[in-house]
Length: 223
Image (tube, rainbow, N blue to C red):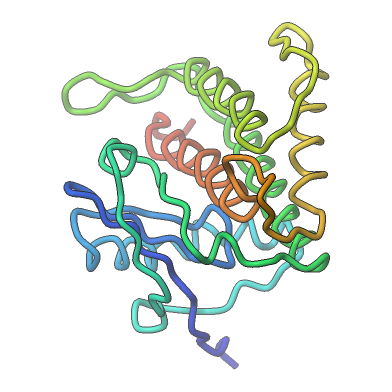
């Protein structure tokens, strides 16, 4: 019997040049387009690419198509949106997070990291260039993702020992701290850090998966 379709709540972030559509309950499932229609179409088309994340987290991803996407909020974008990242914090990101929902979002972020790490392990060192010869090679993408994750600690209000790229345990410890924070019950307060945990989960998972999918798309045939 085919899987039943289920509506998927989506937040739409509208910039002047680019629009992002993000599945509210599925951190990392965020895609962009030139307009809202294009962003929603792309989001729906990435369901199967996101499925390994849900499976690794032990969560059933419902079948859905373009018609099952339900826009629950639209927020203004910024230069960050137009540059290519979902940078707006929405009202849905300020909803209290139950202990169960927090564990779920942490599991999906951890799975997104695992998918990224697995893609990197299987990819060639030199990636196919774009039509104009642009694009980072593998080592540069990995360094970029790791540097971003170091910055995410501050955005989430975490204070840890300085990140050491020459110490493998450093990244593990930083990721563990992020997951511990994302996995806790959370309620908004006046002392919140710049990123509320639901937005942090969405942004962190998106960044890892966006580059994982870029690496897959740019890997040499047969690699």
